[in-house]
Length: 298
Image (tube, rainbow, N blue to C red):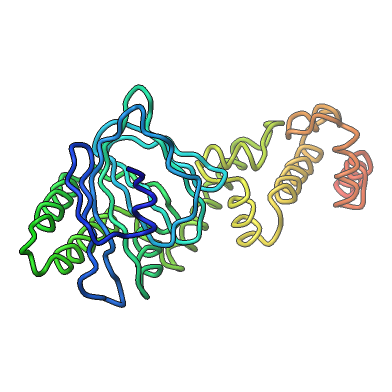
């Protein structure tokens, strides 16, 4: 039986087969959120790939054993035990069990006016989400068991409350979004850490945004952005000016050659160092040293 077809064309019949349990819930409309179907399936190696195709509803799968592969657009996820994968309306998906370790999963499909807002709140930007909660499987089991009872008059409310409970668990496990002030503080802390690295390791010729962002475990683009925002100049410009000011002190206080000074402050090319120095101070390193010595003799 093709699960995805069942999801897209809910039936009024309940199934309870050896490998597939399927319950369609259409008794009473709930316009905010309406549960369309719930089920459990033990996939066999022979089961064909589901999709690729578009679904008209939200569909949430939870893998309880085995593993498989979920494809959303051009991205494929390896999905294993205790993991959700989410399908949203009008998106193209496919999924298939692993041939060596076929999965077993529960699913629930739903739609309604507030589904998109609720899903975005709980899943944020994740289509696949690991959730090692002991409650999830028992919630699905209870939901299916109660809704398989022909005399059950409140199966729609039972399924709806179970969905809310599942989404509550997912939301509680998501990392909390930082406030604007917390994000600003975090950015400032990264910049302070970067300045400490520059202060102690400015002589490294490989000192770069990539090296520092890797040290701070943040993305290079994010680091470049927060550094420019807090220091009012790009990282490379700040590092160059910092090194040139160190060079000034060395030109004043030592008799080291221009090449030695360039190497000591992290420049691999003495000519490039001289050009940068002249561009910033309007004097070449040699003329700067002469000017300092002359002023000291006066």
